Image (cartoon, rainbow, N blue to C red):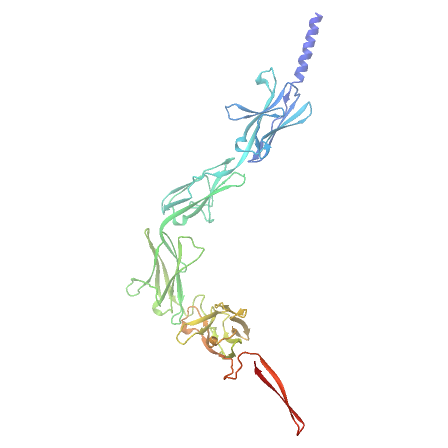
Amino acid sequence: MKKEMFTTIVLSSIFCSVFAARPDIVDDILPEVKRLGQTAYLNCSVINLQSPAQLQWLKKTSPIGPQKNISSDETVFIDEVVEGKRKYDVVKYGNTNRLMYQLIVRSLTETDAGTYTCQIYLPNQNYKEWPQKLGVLTVQIPPTIKNDSLASITVNEGQNITLLCEAQGNPAPNITWKRADGFPLPNGGFQHRGGIYKVYQINATDRGQFICIADNNVKPPASYTIQLVVTFAPYCTAVQDTVGQAQNRRFHAKLECLVAANPRAEVIWYKENKATREKDQIQDNDKYKLEQQDDQRLKADEKWYTLEIKNVQGNDYGDYYCTGKNEHGENQAQFQLFETTECQGQNCPSVGAIPEIVDDILPEVKKQGQTAYLNCSIIHLLHFIAKVQWIKQTSPTGPPKNISSDETVLIDEVVGGQMKYDVVKYRSNDSDIYQLIIRSLMETDAGNYTCQIYLPNWDYEDWPQTTCVLTVQKTMKCQGQNCPTGKALASYQVSIVTFMFGLTISFSIRYCF
C-alpha cells in the first residue's frame, strides 16, 4: 500500500514539473505595416523554451498552399541576399525564462505581404498541440495606372463618352477625375470619384485635358491625362459687340471676334447694306484692315480676328458680322458701330494734347571725323501713344533709311569702338528732346535728316515731321608739285646778320625729306 502511494506521488511530481515547464507563446504578434522597400520586424515572445523544443518562423504562401519554412531558432533556411544583406534574419533577445525571437524581413516587395506564423516545435507531441501565433505583414504599394488607358479621345459635339481609369496599389487606391484647366466638369462639380466617368451630350466647352488621379496615401500618387478632342461647328463671340467712334476726324474703329471651331473655320466679315438689307462681304483694302491676332492664352482651336475700319465716316455706321464656317456648320457674331462726338479707344489723343515738333532743327556743319548732334524738340508726347523716329533720305528718289524709333537705334554699326548712331532723350522745360548723335562723320553722312512722330491710327500725311541738313566739310589738302607727300617734316633755323645795323634776322625753313 505504501509502495503504491509513493509511486503515485512521484508520478504526480513529475507530471506537475513537466506541466509547469511547458513552453508557450505569451503575447500576440503585433501587425506590421511597411512601405515597399522598407524593413519589417515581427516579434514573437516565448517562455520556458528549452531543448528539444525549437522556435520556428513560417510564412503562408497561399490560403490553401503549404507554408514556407523560414527559420528554426536563429538559423535561417532561406539563403537570399538583397542589396548586400540577407533577406531574412532572426535575432534572439531575453533570458532563459522569457525570450523574444525577432524576424527581420528586408527590402520588402509585394510578395512579402501576408501571414507569418511563429510556432514552437515540440517533438513527440501532436502537431495540433504546438503553441503558435499568427502575425500579419502589410506591404504598402504606391498606386499605378494601367498603361492601356487611352491618351486621347475624339468625339463629335452631342455624343456620349465613357472615360476609364484603372489603378492598382495597396491599399486599393481611390480614383478621382478633374479638369486640367481647373474649370468645372461637364456634369457639374470639380471632382468625380470612381474609375468610370460617363459624360452625356458632349459640348464644345467640354474639350480639354481630363486628369485621372489614383491615391492611397502611399506616395507618390499616380496620375494619367486624357485629351478630349471635340469636333464642332464654329462659335463666334464678339469681344465687344457695340463700338463707338467719331466721324470725319481720321479716327479708326476696331471690331474683335473670337472664333472657336474644330476643324478650323473659314472666317468672313460682312457689313449690312442699309438700303438692301443684304450683307456685303468685306475685303482687305485701303478702307478695311483684316487681321488674325496671336494670343498665347487661346486654345489650339481658338482664333482671334480683327476688323479695322479706317478713317470712320458717316456711312460706316451700322451692323457688322463676323461669320465662321466649317463642315459641321456655320455661326456668326454681330457688331454695331455707332457715332460718338469724341474719339473712342485706347489710341485716341488727349484733348488739346496732340504731339507736336515745336522748333526747327538747326542745321549742323561739321568736319570729317567729328561728331554731329541733331536736336528734335517735341511737346505733348507723354500723354499720347506715339513714337519719335529719325530718318535719313539717302537720295532724292530712293527709299529713306530708318535710323531709330524712340531711343532704340535700328542700325548696328560701330566705328572707333563706339556706336555710329545714338539717340539720347532728355527733358527741357515742357519739351522732350530727342538728340541724334552721329560719330566719325564721313562724306556719305551729309544730307537731309527727318525727325517725325509716328501716330498709330493716323494717316502718314498727318504725322508731324521736320527736316534738317547736316553738312560734312572735307579736310583741306595741299595742291601742287611742292606739297608734302606724307613724309616727315624737318625744320632749320637760319640767322642773317646785317653788319651795317648790327641786327640779326632769324627765320625757319621747313621741308620734306
